[in-house]
Amino acid sequence: MNKSPVLPDSWFSTETVQARLMDPRGDLAERAIQIRRNPVSGRTSRIAFSRVNEKEAGVDRLPAPPPDADQTTRCPFCRPQVMTQTPQLIPQIHPDGRMRRGESLLFPNLFPYGAYSAVSLFDNTHFVEIGTAVESSYTDCLVNCADYLKRVHRHDPSAVHMAITQNHLPSAGGSMVHPHLQVHADRIGANHQRFLHERALAHRQACRRGLFSDYAAHEVRLRERYIGNTGPWVWMAAFAPEGFFEIWAVYPGTTSLLVLDESDWHHLAVGMIRVQRLYRSLNRNGYNFGLLAVETPQSALELRAVMVVRSNYAPWTRSDHTGFEVMLGDMATFTAPEETARLARAFWQ
Ligand SMILES: [Zn+2]
Image (cartoon, rainbow, N blue to C red; front, side, top):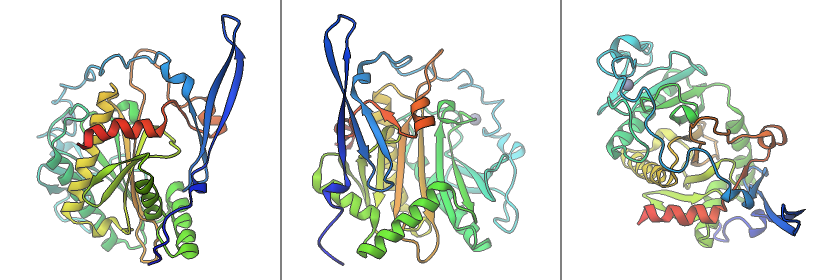
């Protein structure tokens, strides 16, 4: 292994532009906007610092639980009706139809997004406030997802594009408040899987090293956005965020979800709940999580989990995706990633 390390600092480029305006009192004012280039994707994103003090609807306190937070009898994911109202796996994947691990229950997604699309419940708790989940429920659920993906891999080796995702609460795209993960496997990759796979391969061919291990090593050395570790996972605030309070966890040198053991998943679970506690401290209650892999022997794409917080639901709250994100393609957030890391470190002590 080449010891000369990591990505050059020049890959982490930040430029600041100043907007000049006459403020409402008639005085000349300047507003700084940082434009950062993501060293992995090459995409730019912006930190619009002046908006950080803007009054955002619904973040004075943690929002109240959703209206259906106690509607367990109407929820198809609650027991006992989960055993009759959810679909079952084909016998070629699992003869029992549903997979159990501890209290976690996994079954196919009734509304699939791809060839292999499953839902994995953490347990029978219908509503779990962000940051309060039991670690073992997350570990069991993640292991259940991995066991399902192993079975898919044996059944259909062409379905190499795999992912585990989470939409916590409807503000993050979740259709059910009952906490769960989504599990995906498909022959045809999604945009991020295809792009990252090619990008990681090009980096390995050029440097003989892993793109995300180089990225993580750079961040650990610099300490500006590095948060801490949980087991093998290295946690850091994203340098050029494409979501609010975006945090990454890299597992250096590992490209497959199928080789992780229970301890690896436990350590990921611990970090996920710590990040949830950070989001809760910011009075946010919805977030997305994602972990992608391309399960081929030659894949150079190391494991990297991503978490981003989403705008709270509140009457007439604004979406976190404006014309700037949707039409220009640059995400604009308001907090420096170095500040996100500083806030997150409190949950690593
Ligand atoms: Zn439920």
